[in-house]
Image (cartoon, rainbow, N blue to C red; front, side, top):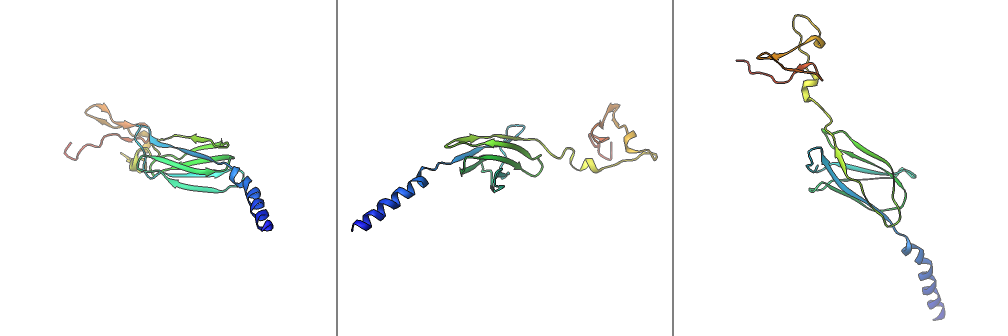
Length: 154
């Protein structure tokens, strides 16, 4: 009986360090530049010491959450098609800390398909194009293409 009691006491004493370990948490919200939440964005957290990664996606409220992370340094990456990826590196997470890292994603693909269009008039290169519409400048300076495409009747 004493041996059984001794085993129980020893198992409790040896398991105490396990119960005393505490973790941290990283949570936040992902929005676009207009302030609208982004649903379904892929969020990846990487432990810089071990290169272990965990992934999640933002909820319908644009929120992501990584509970039970060991106190360490982390890199966080947020990706969504049509937006530029956002990265925060070397985020220090301490014992029992809830770190809040909000992200604002920038539009990634400006101009859509216009960036691939090349209109040539009289054999000139696209860099020399200059479009007007009713005498007003209609040239997109980023892509040397038109800004507003008028209808065929115009």
